[in-house]
Length: 160
Image (tube, rainbow, N blue to C red; front, top):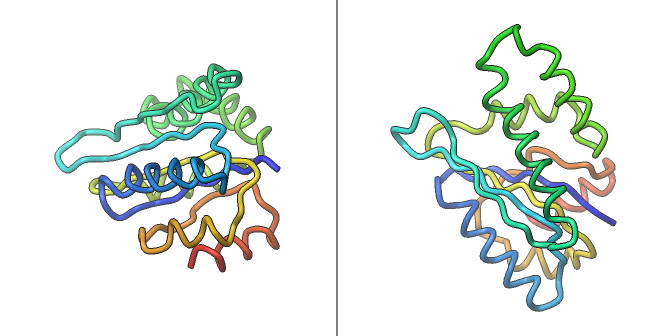
């Protein structure tokens, strides 16, 4: 099953550290990373910075467009005002099609502040128990996912 998760870290480099752990887990066959993006908001910066990777070369272009749409909608469209109301609606509709409702977009937007970072990951075939062991201790908070309530509970239990 393909899973979208968004994890908040209370440090600017926390999400990047999690990416390294996630890639190590992928190398050991514990998860397949379809794609991921990191947002960090360094102290003194006017806005957050986004970096994404094309982990799955066959689907990378599509995910790159998705990340641009998602993060543009989260951090830049709201600043432009009513003139782009239709564009904001289109963004909300597009990301909800992959299981991310507007309420989760609002939650992600509210959580990313100066001095924090966010890892958004699209993964498949995760061995939750072993992956949880790898990522334990990175002090993250799950703020968005397309999982069912039961799957979300298992994820939170596994990752602590």
